[in-house]
Image 1 (cartoon, helix red, strand yellow):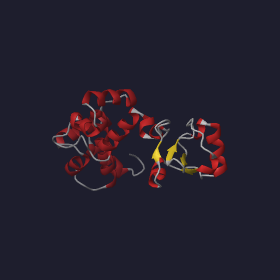
Image 2 (tube, rainbow, N blue to C red):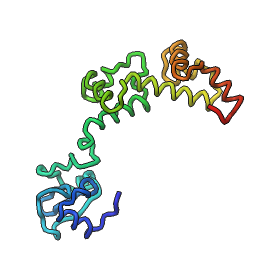
Image 3 (cartoon, helix red, strand yellow):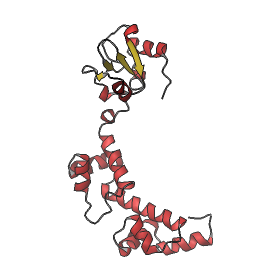
Image 4 (tube, one colour):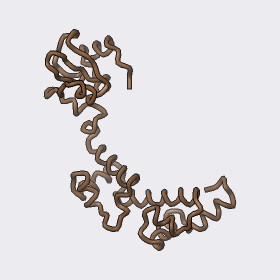
Length: 196
């Protein structure tokens, strides 16, 4: 985040410099509206102040401009478009295990995001070249590998903590991914701490 210097922001606003779009927001004291630096509105410099985010401008009592639509500024979720939905889904899958529970499904995950399951799958294909199920499987295997390397937990506990529903499925996915069972990986890691 840049440090807001009034003179620099004012030059960028008057020039409608797109390089500054999303880096600061212009608030007009007389209208109580805030804008993007590229907005065609031309308030006088003595009537403006600058904020580093739209939230800061709103907190100070300004409302968004209907003309330049600050919610579509670069770096906002709307500007990032469908990638923002994919990123949110990734956080739910990787951080919260959204596809690990017994009744979890791509449809339920998509509903949490406000879209349909087919749309979510299309977005994953476009942005990640993988399905949500494949991403969840990879996240589970990676969690399990970290637990194998960093704990002394029994393999059955690791399988459950990593999000697998059964030890049998855990072993099958682990062998598919690493071409070795988890016990072999743990044994090799103990024998040679520098290898993994």
